[in-house]
Image (cartoon, rainbow, N blue to C red; front, side):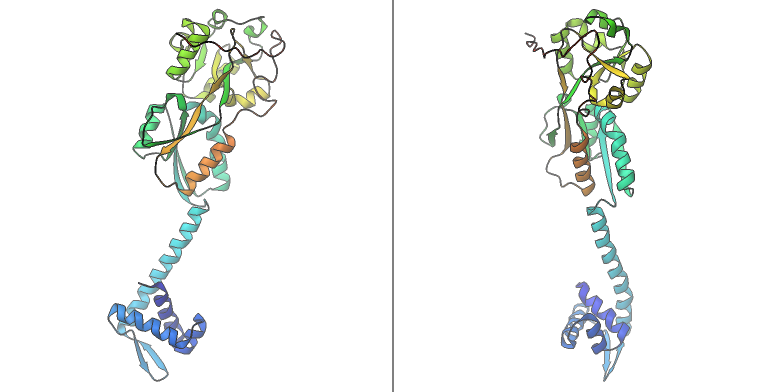
Length: 327
């Protein structure tokens, strides 16, 4: 059904004159007449009784007018909704975040949405990579941000690699280990170590670089997916943290946490990815989230990184060490 035909009928019902209705619609009278005749032909009933200059709606005409008002209102409301959805004023978004991405993105993104897109409904899932991938494949979440090294290849996933993030060991300012001229694995193991679940690749790298006792099963004593809580513990105890420095930008910038370079030192980098279902159209809210992730998922600002101030016992930067792969 042509919505313009309905608009023309409403105009005639309001003005009760073809001339006045045509003027209000910026149409010629013949064009208006043809439009209403087309509507009558489509419905198979007479809608208007024409008697000289007087034009009255028939019973069918009054019925159509009642429905036309509702139809045109719904059509206008539909267009408003599409516009609001497209501009991020309304919508639904369900995201899944691994431990490190959650520590970097969750609060800033929720703050951004509450401030700039308060009517968009946001749902957040957190957990291990395999659980989040399953949620994505079951379509209970729209997109996930996880450790790329823990992802298994799958044809149904669109994997978009994000910027690499520096990482390593952190401790509180004033930690006894900072007084040592050199920190090795033996010294490190004298203290609790907090970390999130680590991929098999990271575990292999730690063993290659530091020895078998550096395997997370032996080294990590506090295993938790809530990075913010672990950092609070590290800041107030002698526990250490192994993870991504960007999770602790504020603490590093304020000097509350410091990087602890364990010998032999290797510059470490985390690899993360934004993952969605392949071949699917993205909602405007998802496009907004993707743009936010690319703008905010990055290392600490220059001068706020863990490497900005070397430990007093380790003057000057330590050059990157390339450890050969395990045989």
